[in-house]
Length: 173
Image 1 (tube, helix red, strand yellow):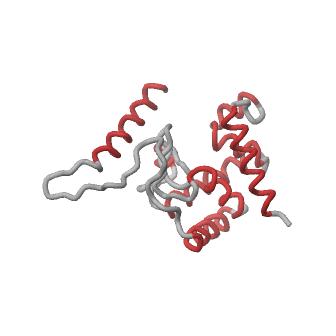
Image 2: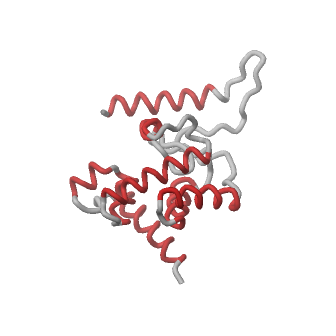
C-alpha cells in the first residue's frame, strides 16, 4: 500500500509542478499550490460556502455546523488546498476516495463538499452517530478506528477530533 501512496503523491506533485511551467502558447499559473504548502487561494466566500454546506448537509441529514467545522479544520475553506499526504480540496479528499464518490474535480467546491458530506454521513452511520469516532475515521481511516475500537491515540487525530468538537461547542447556545 505504501508504494501506491507514494506513487499518488508523486503524481499529484508532478501535476501541480507542471501547472507552473510555462509552455509554448500557454500561460503559466503563478499561484498553483504544491503539496503540503499553504494554499494559494482565498477561502470561499461565507455565503457561497454556507449555501453549499447547507444543501449537502440537508441532503445527507447531518448537522451543517459539523460540516463547517470539518471544512475549517481541513482546509480553512480554501478550495485549492492540498495536504502533505495528497488530500485535496475543501474537505481534503484523498484521490481514491474522491474517485469512489464520483468526483471529477476534487478542487470544485460543490463536488468536494458533496462527496465529503457523503463520506462523513457514511462514517456517522457506521459508528452509530458517535461523532468522535466518525471524525477520527475521517482523519485516520476507519481501519485504524476499528482496530483501536476508539479514537486512535495518534496526536494529530486526537487534536483533530478535539478541535472540531470544541468548534461545535462554540456554536451551541
